[in-house]
Each structure stands twice: as C-alpha cells, then as structure tokens.
Picture 1: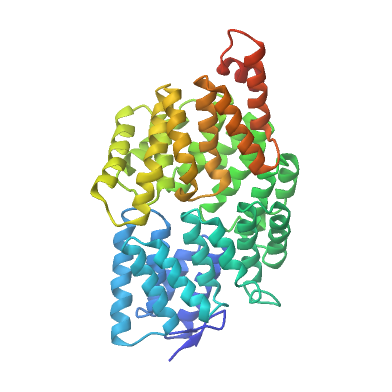
Picture 2 (picture 1 turned 120 degrees about the horizontal axis):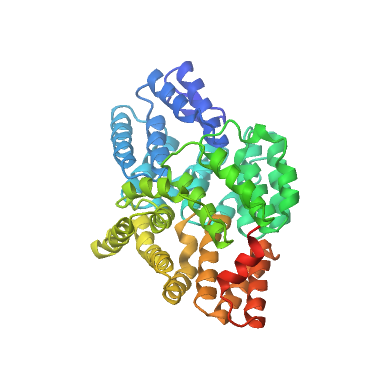
Length: 463
C-alpha cells in the first residue's frame, strides 16, 4: 500500500502516523528547521521499513560533511537496499536510494543525476528539488543550481505547497550568478509565500552584502525573526550575515558582540559553524581588530578534524583555525593529510577537490601565517580559478579573496593587489567598505614613504 506525501507523490510509507512525521520532516528540511532529525526519527520508528526515509537519513548525514557520519549513511543505504529487495519500492524512491549509493561511492555528481531523474518524472517533488540544490551548493555549482531550477519554474507556481521554498532557492541561485535585482525580488516573494523560509531570507541578505547596502540590509532584517528562529544551526549563519553588514560599516564592537552572543553562542564543531567563526575573525584581523583568544577554541575543535576530507570548504576553514591557534603542528598535520589524499588517488570527487584546489589554498593559509606573503599570494592566486569548486557561496569564499589581496599588499605586490581589487569590484558591481579601505591603503602607500600596509590599514580602521 502507498500513501501520497505533501506534494502528491506516492510513497511506500506504511501508515498515517509515519506519513505525518515524514511530511513534517520534509517541511523541516525545506525550512532548515531544528526539528528535522527528530521527526525523521519518528517516521522511521513508526515504519521501520520505510526505504525512502532511510535513504534520506543517509543523504542528510552526508550533507553534514563529517567523516564519522559516512558509517551512518552506509548503514542507511544497506537498510534501504534490503527493504527494496524484500518488497519493491516505487521508482521514484529507488532513485533516492541510488543517489545515496552514488555519493557513498564518492560521486555526489552522480547523486545529482539521480535527483534529476526524480525531477524528470516528478517535477513537483520539492524534496528532490532541495536535495539537488543542496548537493550542488556543496560543489559550488551555481550555474547548475540555476539551470536545474529554471527547468522547474512552471511547476512551482499557482499555489504549489513549496512555491515559497522554490523561490528562496531560485533567489539564491540568481544572487550567486550576479542577478542581484531579480534575486531580491524572488527572495522577498519567498518570504511572502513561506514566512519560515530561512534560505530565501538569507538569499536577500546575500544581495545586500554583494551590493554594498549594509545599512539597508540591517534595517530589512529587523522584525523577520519568523524566517529563522525555528532553524537548526543555520540561525548562526543568519547572524553571520548581519555581522558582515556591521563589518562593512566598521561596527567592530557590534561584530564581536554578535560573535560572542550568537555566532559562537554554542561551541559546536559543525564545520559550517566553524566556517562562520573563522572567517569573521580573520576579516576582523584584516581590519586591525584584536580578537583576543577567540581562535583557541576553534583551533582545538579543528585539531580533531585533520583527517576528515569530506568537504574542501570544511578543511580550509579548519586550516584557518589551526593557523591562528596555539599549536602549529596541527596545521602541518592537516596539510600533510590533504597532500596524502592526492597521492592515494582516490576515486572520490570531494577528495579530489580537497587536493586541488584545496591543498594550494591551505598552503597559502600556512604561508600567510608565517608572513611569507609572496608565497601566500602565489598559492592563493593559483587556487582562485578553481576555488568555487570547494562549495559555499561568494560571500563565504570572499575571505579567500581578501586573503589573496592582503597577501599581495603585505608582500609588496601592489600591481597584483590592484588587479584583484578590480576583479572583486567588477564582480560585485560596487565598492564595499573593504574595497574602499584597500584602495585608500594603496594610495597611502604611494603617498607616504616608510609606511607599511599594516600601518595604513590600522590608521583607517581601528577606533
């Protein structure tokens, strides 16, 4: 017997109780809700032979980018396969199982292809839409995200239950591909249709960051708690975006307050939370702000992750923490482990990205720590053409743009610094506070003999 889920798709879930928990799970996944894992557990407790539930448990585990959760994903895959052999599941559900198997074998791109098969026959399946979007995000595939959603535009309108969440995803892809006006329109529409759409809310935050509208962005976020207060750790990322806007305005005390009370309110070791924290601290230090011992707890957590290599984005932010922590050997260990990934020649797409461009960028981080700025610039500039493949957003990867610019400035490579700044300004279409300060610093270097970039920046940024 099958039941229809909230999108009208047939599922092999066995009873109404499990179906209700499953629908709640899917809603939670779309909204980045804290209850998602709990309700998935309830669905599987009500129907232990629900193959799609097990497949999604595995996929959700892999999205978390933690080595120990690969064992959870493999167990979920074996269970789903066993259930399918005993009592064949629907064709749609089998594609989910195949997607999990492909990713376990090292190919998230084949997992995306499996989601594509689901959407070819079931375009109204917003769970597949969101999973496709999430996996592409981890690969930095902004063009693919946009193309996949534009093929579905006709489905998610006229009252589709996930129309708001679709618009939130589409807003993000528009922002990541430079269509800032349209991105803002779709993000605002997402919240009108689904007030708890944290992803759509945050897509508009991205627009304000990329278009250097910090004051307007901070005003817009006021009073929109419904969009993100229900969230899992994604709520820390919402505060991270607000911190970026304050940083652009030079509100360093406010940024540090957000860091202590929100961004690192809970000292988690989730790589996304560590990425929020490390990238804010480094940006503050670029502005000449002393951050005290805040690096230490991040470095301590990152030191336990030197063998993960699930996501290059994660490894690089672990490296950022370790390069600023008290134990230099931990950074060396992570760098050596990243090197060994290439030597072993794994057929793993994520580990291939860890090796290239991840290793180059990590070497640049270590060189920057050691004040070998020319080497840091050389490594980071060589990594830049492929750096989008580490995943994340333009706003998140901008810390590496700033690192390359800082390396050039501090290494006396002023023409290279100008080139990087021009590219950054062109991509954004605006000069934000960081860009303005660096152009001013370059003018200061030209006009004042004997000054270093550190003196010029400190004079302009530290209150």
